Each structure stands twice: as structure tokens, then as C-alpha cells.
Image (cartoon, rainbow, N blue to C red; front, side):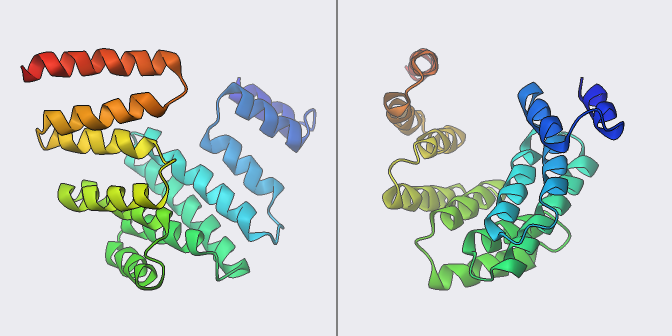
Length: 210
């Protein structure tokens, strides 16, 4: 279906806006973000470029091919760089650009950028979330817990953090703490089906623990 839509666009049987809508309706993918980037190629609005960068970046976790992941990181970095060139005060774009660098051949540049931001904006939630993510990747689980805990203190509505903390404690083989955070997560989500499945998972964890 994706190939068919692109062929229609190339033959000028489909407008760019229609192509983007249909691609996103089919299944949001890096391809739809690519065409969105074409649409906004001459935009001078930094938040649009930040949005495009985040869109590329958010697909990285669903890609198994290292070369495809590298291409997505490069695309995300390009968009975040563009956002910064339009507005050097866009701190979130700087954080995400640093996060891209960390996943390339120049990780220390990214780490340095994040540390510099932390000196002046330590209460930035996105910063704490990204630092927590990289702490997990480097197996610094206690540091990740500290980062996520601070992020929750800054914004208690970031309920996904409860799930992240539960997973970390499970890795640390602290089942009781893992269950504690899972219960908090299940109690706060509005999706009843998901909440029920989490409670069933908690029951299985309880059985394993006892």
C-alpha cells in the first residue's frame, strides 16, 4: 500500500498533503516523516523542525537494522540542528541533538552537551528522561532511578516513568519495588484493558516472588 501511494504521488495523482495523511493513516513510519520534511523544507519555524526530528527519533526503537537506525539518527540530528539554527534557545532541540550524537561515533560530544545543559537547566524534564535512558544503556541502573525519580518530582503526570522504574527494579531483581511501581502505573492509566493486563502480570510476579 505504501509503495502504491508513493507511485500515485510521483505520477502527480496524489497531492503531498494527501500522501502524508494516507501514509499516517496506514501506519506512521519514517517514510511519512520524510514526506513531511519535504512539505516543510522551507519552514523557518524551529518547533516544526523539532517535531520532525522527534518523529524520526521515535522510530529508532522499532528498527532492527543497524544501518537503518543510523540513517534515522542522522535524519533526526539534521532536523534538530535545523531547529537550533532557527532558534538557539530551543533547549529541547539541543538535548535531542545531543542524544543523537551519543548514539553515533561521537558519544562524548553528546554527553558533554547534556552535562552543559544540566548546569543551567537541571529541572528540564526531557533532559532527565534522556539521561535516565542513557544510564540504563550503560547499565547504571541506580543513576537511572535517580533521574526518573527527579523527572517524576518535576511532573507527576509523566506516568510512563512508573513503568520504566518498574522495569529497572525488575532488572535489579527487586520484585517488590517493581510491583509497587507497576501498581502505581496501572492505577493512573485510563486504558482499562491495559490496566487489567498489568494487574494480571502483577499477580504472576507475586506468585514468582512467593
